[in-house]
Length: 116
Image 1 (cartoon, rainbow, N blue to C red):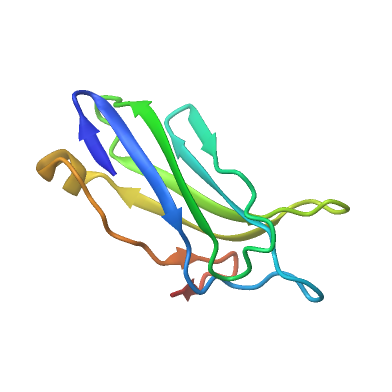
Image 2 (cartoon, rainbow, N blue to C red):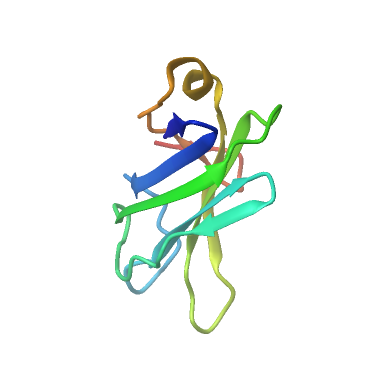
């Protein structure tokens, strides 16, 4: 992530060691990025399994006072509703102070556990 003159640039690179929500085949994950009322979504990584690669970039206008970004990972399903894999709230303090943050973050699952 980077702060470029009032714009927040978020690059979703990929995920590692995701919780598997499917029984019979490889899961089809996608990532949702929310900042204020702005919502972006990656493409579905068909058969991406536990280690999908996205390499997708989103740009949002920075909102004064808003210092968190919400990231959620889902498994796309055709027949039933999509499965929540995990999510994380990212504090933007490092981006605001240094201009960038190339960290990765553990996801919290719906059971309250962290999957690394």
